[in-house]
Structures are given as structure tokens and as C-alpha cells.
Length: 377
Image (cartoon, rainbow, N blue to C red; front, side):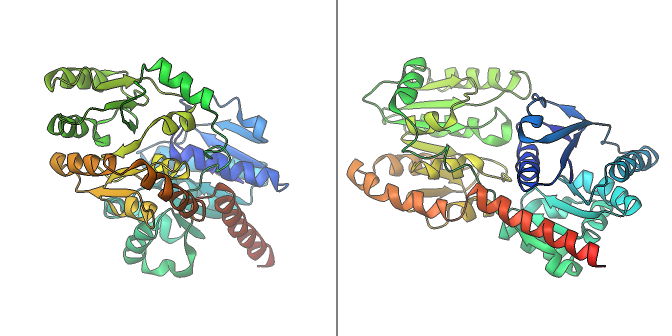
């Protein structure tokens, strides 16, 4: 198995590649992850039995792209690769050419939401159309791909994103871990806490959330914005100015990225995902539900799919600060005893649909089918 990712980082494509590669090695197979650059340490891959491969993958030039595909094909032949799995639309083109040269099966994953299907280039559409298997993470996205590429038929499969439910289990998150974060962030004991866990990027809706908080100034609460700074802190600096502009200095805390996300989510009374653009994974929304947290999110198809069945979920029109403010007010007005009564339902609902082990088992089954069918042919 050879997984292709543009960059090995903390993003969803890299995480899925690692999950699938680890599952392959655990099942007795051999797995490689090829990437052009590593935004986080790739030295831990061998700990999961996965072999890292750094090679040039990205190219917009057809001639250079041909050379990249030839290099990937050579690697596949030398290492007796059965399946190449491209974890991005751009790498689907490289993976398609490489798999064809090496005689491998090709699996491609479309990571974007339904709206991203229309933006696919002709080369990417062709690569998906000729893949042995195309994976999406949501039914809404699968419907759009099926419309764009009707010939896929049964070669199109939906495997929802799954998380480690043992990690995001309220029974496993100890009180000292939560207290440590509360002390670190100086969170008052007597005030509700809302949290927006997301990288500091414009599309995540931080500015919209600040505008909404300014509209519900009568509610005494604390808001924690926590996430990484992909642009080196430029956007975060802008948000700090907006906090001052809206006079929210005593209500909003901007925190650094935290490793113990389970404890951070348990600290919050409400998780907010006010995205301006549809998210591919909605991973935080899944993790929050696994811990029984109420969620307010922008009304995108993928978000609705992830929140389906939850008794503590609110969706608001993207970009509507007033609606977001009212949703936050409504969620925080839920009596504590009612919230506690609904918590088991929220947890059970998401555990049935977002289990990492189910996700990897389903993917392994598809891999196995492809290899067996290829060998039989």
C-alpha cells in the first residue's frame, strides 16, 4: 500500500492516510506514506509500522508531472505495491498515471465537500473516473460526484470520518486534566464557557463569532478561541484588534493550540463551529459530540450529516451573526438537568456513526476486495 499526500501535516488527509496505513500494517501488510514536505514530524510513522517516503509530488507542469508519475511508478514496482491511494484531487492525477504504469490498483479520496466537485479540473475528473475505487466522507458529497461522473457506479463508496472513541470518552477524561486547562486559561468557575476550536483561518468564522458575541453582550460568558496559526499569526493579530473593537477583552481568550483536545472540549459548555466555508471533516464537531457537548455549527450539508440525530445541535445560516448569537443564547439557556439527560443520547448517536475502527475496517475490506479481484484477473 502506498498512500500519497501533498504534505504530511495535522490535516485530515494526512490523518486518514496514517489511519489507513496503520490498519494495513496491523493486518499484516506493508504500508508507505509518500509526501513532498512534512509540516509535523514524520519520524513517528515507523512507530505505527508505516514507512515514510519523501519525494516530489506536486507539479502543475504536465512535463514535470509526467516525471513525478514515472518516479512514483518506479517506486511502486520496486516495492511491489498493490494499491496506490491518492489522498487529494491533485494527486489523483499523479496516482492515476503511476498506477497505470506500475500495474497497481488506484484508490482516490475526494476530501472536499459537495461544493468542491464543480471545481475539479478535467484531468482530476478523468483520474477519478478511471480509479478502481473513489471514496468520499459524506453522502452529500457522493451524490454530487455521482452526478458529475455517472460512470463510477459501484466504484463510489462512502466511508464517514471516524475518531478514536477511547480517547474522546467522557469517562476517560479525568478531572485534573480539565482543571489544569481551566487554571491555565483562568476560566471562572461560575460562568458558561463556549469554545471555537479551529485553526486561525478566515474561513473558520472567528470574526463572525466575535460579531455575534457583541450582539449578546447581556450574557455573561467566556469564549475561548483555540487553534494553530497556519499563516504565522497574521490573522490572529487581526482578531486581537477586532476583540478590542467589539470591547470583548474580558470575554474572549485566544489560546494556543492544545494537545489535550479531549480535556479542552470537556471544559466547554458549548462548542461553536461558525464556518464561512464548508468543512471537509467537521472533526471537532464529531469529537465534541463523542464527549456529549452541545454544538452550534454553520448550516452546510456535511455539518448537517455529522449532526444528524443529535438532541443538542443547532445549525445557523453561514455568515449570519444575529442567527449565530440567538443559537448560542438558546443553547446556553438549556437547563443543566436537561442537558445531562440528553448527553447519553448525543454520545450514543455519534458512537454508532463515527468509530475509527469501523472506518478502518470498511477501508480494509475494500482494499482486500481490490487486491483479490486484481489477482484473480
